[in-house]
Length: 237
Image 1: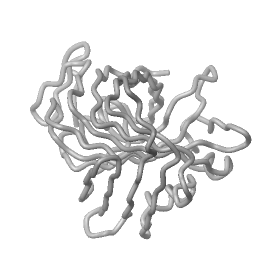
Image 2: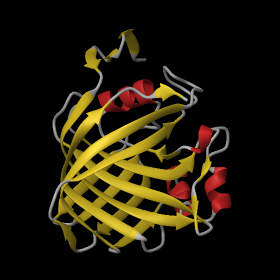
Image 3: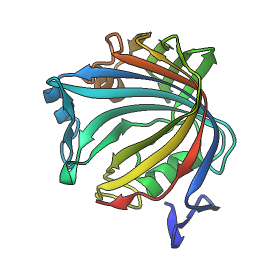
């Protein structure tokens, strides 16, 4: 388990991690979906969070990310998130699954930020504004998806400061609802309605994706050739 060895300094697997950490080179494709509030609420049991609803629908997001070399290594990540309201009515993205291909980032994500990371076997590839991924949990098939982002180019860098919520029942911060932000700048961005095809296996993550509306056409898609930003500590809410 990772250890906090000084203010904003962690030791994980013998690696010293000073916060904030800088993400220098990553590529991302994402898609936004809508879901029934009741099904979304069931995934939040025990977290102290509730779904954010827009026009009577919960809002979810799928993210496919490749990270170039940084303090946590180079790896692929698949995020399944739900936009939520927490204490004080504050809005943020709560990740319900965040499998990764790196052991260091898996443990660091759990212990430092309370993120639901687990080790996957994955093939993630980007081809222009399209991305494809296949995910296995050990030998168990989880999902196969192809995401085609919208064609509208954004001719300037896009700054995003997304609020986040996290809570794990294990790890260095077990049982604590954490609040943070993920300030990022996106370059080479395309967005629009886009499309996604997906095949889901018999796996808990696949069932959560289905509950969050991720078998239907996305409401919005986005692709960024490159993103970078600083990730600081999350604080107890």
